[in-house]
Image 1 (spheres, rainbow, N blue to C red):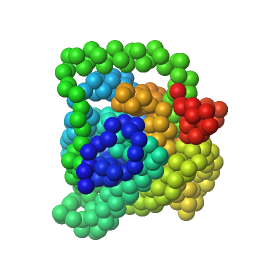
Image 2: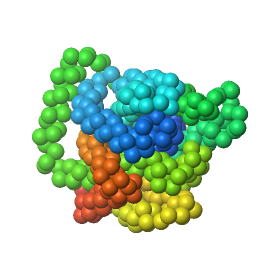
Image 3: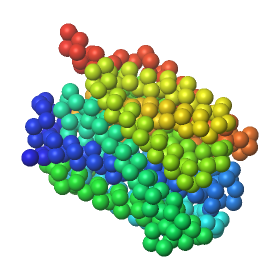
Length: 441
């Protein structure tokens, strides 16, 4: 079947898009191993408990690292997106950032359980995290290119569900092959934490292999790319967009709302494994099992709410998810039982997926097709411009109160603020369906 990419916003059905759409979804399967295994569950917990001097010190250092890498992304993502829209296509950028992320996770093999490896570990994760996030800007901007207009929510949700499945599969294999066996695969030495360190190269291999179909099946016919002109014109276009953004009330208000609740989501991902290890005394094996359950529920949530996104609305999907995250998040901070931690954590997972995938489809509906990457650069900016704030607040509150529970409670403020800002915004799908035929600004 022809997998030629369609131009953004082009009307029509799935004809000529199916292979490209599958490859685009599969990229979520590929790259979700990075945040799941490295940022959230395995390496983060290993760093705080095995590399840093104390779990509290490690939590603060991890939070600072994520803050600084998020700040760099916030500054550079809109600039790179604007430059990329001038020509040359998105795949070269995706390929370059994927290569950097893969190289960094392979480097984690050499991070031994000693305090002298704190700085190298933080540098590798910071650089890899930036590369992962930069690549996601360009992947997100492909959504209107690979999906029919009436299926943006479903394809975003399906990709999100597949991404959580990929995170689940990679996490499960780490558990079965390396962490659980008394004699791990490849003769790894548990005394040197090699059964945990090997998860870095494993994620790198997973990411690289499953990302390949996107480069072969999603076709682009971009205009020629001349670096000097692209930089000049891209920066001029970005400046013009930023000047006009205040006149697009719906767009900038959504970006501000997303800025806040995404900061909460990213912080929750970054500190979930750390919280499980520190407050509930979970072993690496326990954390992996919890991560598997969380990914199952998150994938089911993203997949199930994909139809709600298209048929009821992306705004409704996001608001429902945020309300549930506030209620369940408050509950999980109050309980002491590890069993209830599993139960409430799975409930949280169910609503994490829809909050993310519905945000992507909502923005794809209001972004101008000719400036898709530039606008998704602003979308990344909205998710990262305060990315330093969530981890910093968790880290500072944890150190100040000497309590991880107090630190984690700050995350709920981001969900609540995002909910309140999103509530009064119009639903672009309802506007498009209105008799007047008025489209979202």
